[in-house]
Length: 546
Image 1 (tube, rainbow, N blue to C red):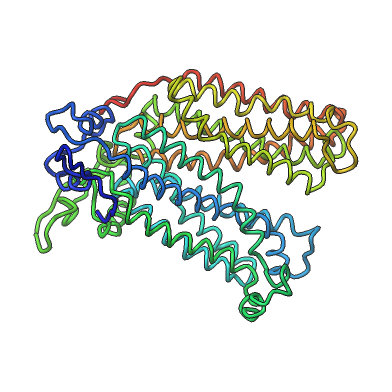
Image 2: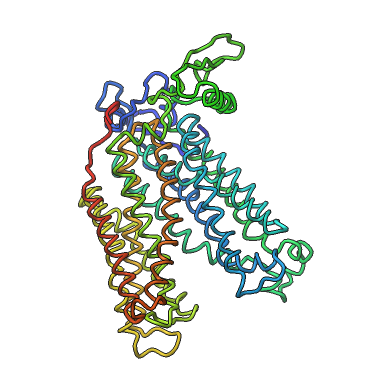
């Protein structure tokens, strides 16, 4: 392990956590979290040293950099996507660029939908750290390719592969639980920071992307811009993507230096076997369909097998214990309930995110706000979010417990949006395109509360889901969660768009009360998720038990 964080305890003479990693072969890590915790806290015969807090904090910082980058790669394109397609597609203007810009923005999520589960499988078989580093390398590469795209289709394809190569979020969610080694205090702190950093990325990334895009148009008098005019005129949107690639390089350094591998060595295979395993999997699907044939694989005794050893190991590729798959995860009723709650909440949160801007700009039944007024209000909400997100998560989980905090997160994350239409009454005396102070404060606080508690739920459900499966299931489970979440986030805007159109412009509903109908329906869906979350139980994973 290449960590430079020293955790030696001179007074007790205990070994550092880094030195303990050399004893992994002697003390196999059990797959269930409770047993793992007993090893790390010294309640077992091994009596290992507890986790060093400084080392854990350093690892958390590295994971925070990864989740921030994941948000940046997803969101930074939004401010300039319209100008990008105008540049790449002839005949487009600001009024007709919307659909093309939407395709560019959504192709990332489409790619992630196809690969999330595969990244989870990779992390569960070849190591979480390896998966994170490989994902960062590929993400940086495709970010650069996207920045130098010369036509619309090349931009679409590279953006798709940027999403396809992005296995950062699911792997980071797995690591943040396992790096705590059963210490609930450290896990709560780490999860709150890692999940919260992604939300901070959502706040800051649009500003960074917007400032760096097409500098020749934005800063024509700048001498620094003029010095790179030939490059920037050919690739006007390279800077925000170059920054993304550089961020990936920095994150790779942090991960290699500060994050240790948490997948036990006896469960981890060398990544050099990836293509062999892929061929075995394809062969099984092609030639052994519908059977339980066993495929013999060469040099697969262990990840540390010496070169030149001639032996064959007969392995059942379909073994659930060694190779978790979608069906084996879904059979675990406890895990299935957690995944369903995550997907449902993802759906309703996206509905809020889609409906609120449409309500703000609507002239019939909405606030008829200008872009500047919306930006100021959301900035104020973001500022409140930054101040309160981590404090709220840590305090609630510590005082009320994880599962009570999940229920509170769903209760104040979505159902409170039923109150949004009251802002119309508070804003009745405002001039065109502006908010009164009362409406401004009301919406800023309301949206901040919704975001804080939504983030609380996402952080908490990550911890709870990780606890519901064995160690070698976690990354695959998080990949499956990301897959379902991506589908939910794709269906949410479609549902919301139809709901807003029906409520505001169909003629069936009076537009003055359309917003009440929109947010009432979304709020009721949120209450349904509250009831779903309240049924989740805090039972820990027991190996071999569904």
